[in-house]
Structures are given as C-alpha cells and as structure tokens.
Length: 191
Ligand code: ADP
Image (cartoon, rainbow, N blue to C red; front, side):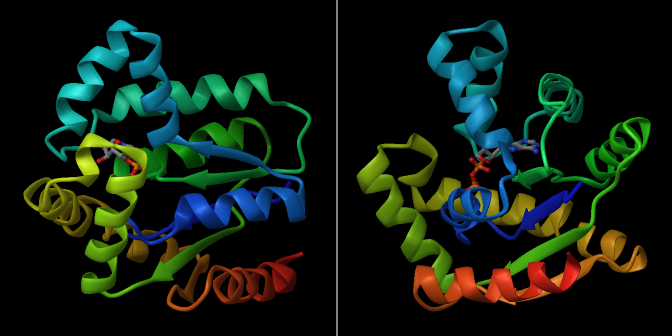
C-alpha cells in the first residue's frame, strides 16, 4: 500500500493537492478536518463538541480524531493506499497511526511537507474564508491561534518522521499545477 501524509501548516494547500493526488494514484483521501466538519453538518454530539474547539482554533482531543481515522481505515480495506490530510497533528496521533497501520500489516511510506511562508498562508486562508464561509478562516486572531497550535504541537512531527527516514520537503509556492508536479516527482521515486 502507498500510505502518504500530506503535511504542513493551515492553508498550505493540503486539501487542494490531495484532491488531485487521489485521482492520479488511486488513493483514498482521509481529512480529519473534513470528517469533523461533516460531523458538524450532521449535527452529531461529536460535531457539537468539536465545533467549540475548532471555532477557537484549538485542536480537537487526540482520542476523537484517532477514533474517526480508525473507523475509516476499517471501512476501506481494498485500496491502493491512503492520503492522510491534517492527520496526524500531534506526536500521540502519529504513534497511534503507526500502531493502527502495523495491525493492518502496512505503514506510512512518506510524509510530504508543503513549505509555504507565513504571509502567503494568511492570504490564502482569508481568501478561502471568503469563498467557503468557514468560520475559523475569517478571523485573523483565530488563524494566528491555529498557526500557534501548529508550531507547538504539529511541527514536532517533522523530527518524528525524519527519524524514520520518511520526511520529504516540497516547495508549496507556485501554481497549483507546479506544486502538484513537485509532489508527483517525489512520490514517483517512492513507488
Ligand atoms: P487547516 O489545516 O486549514 O487548519 P483543517 O480542516 O485540517 O484545516 O482543520 C480545521 C480544524 O479542525 C483544526 O483547527 C482543528 O481544530 C480541527 N482538527 C482537524 N484535524 C485535527 C486533528 N488531526 N487533531 C486535532 N484537531 C484537528
């Protein structure tokens, strides 16, 4: 199986690029942000609790997102692999993912880290907020909080995956096509 993590700060383009990668490599896209937003739309208890945190730019508890990912892995047994988008976001999530995959006799092949500078991130998120209406994309203070959470809790994953020799840095600036090409040229060396 080809299991990839698409990694990077909020607004770096993970969702856009995942949508293209699943078509080219026949992978299943697992975005914890999308899964949480669909819980909110469904009006579930989980969605209700998650929304309170998401609207403040705070991460949802590890057990919640790990449970959601586990359920999705179970329901998608016959796939070429997964693209994890927005997960893992903490060391505890990464360790849990390693365990879940090893129970299924598979593993993460690579973490692809999209590098985008801070000013560009803020621009992209505010633009997305206008189009999508996502409440956590519209307030510069909340966006700043999300970037803080990223730096504090998520950026340490870079070392975690470097130790496993699975870390790849990808230039995330340029057109959507150019960035897609940057990703594909790394993925094609993995296959
Ligand atoms: P972005 O990466 O652009 O911030 P996401 O849709 O991935 O957007 O995430 C939106 C929010 O959902 C996060 O700020 C966080 O509150 C919550 N969330 C998403 N994925 C996770 C995760 N793996 N762990 C904890 N919280 C998460």
